[in-house]
Image (cartoon, rainbow, N blue to C red; front, side, top):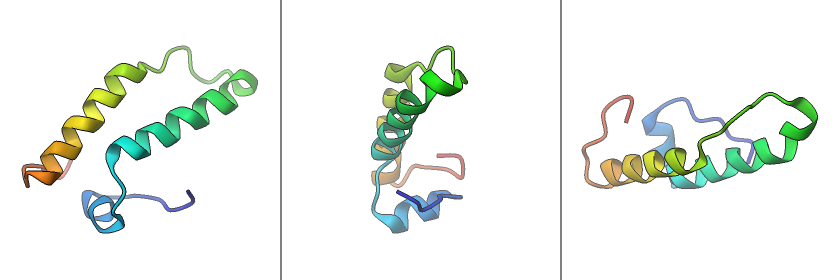
Length: 67
């Protein structure tokens, strides 16, 4: 995944979900963090809950500029 998402409209037009984006980046953190040691905690459960809520808001047309 090389595409960068700068706005809610980018996410809507791409057809990718927020859940998929969070999963992708959490996996990258797992792959790279052992070497980089950039993250102490990632709060994966909370990130996935938020992503699901944002996806629901997008689907329901209730997402704001910051979703």
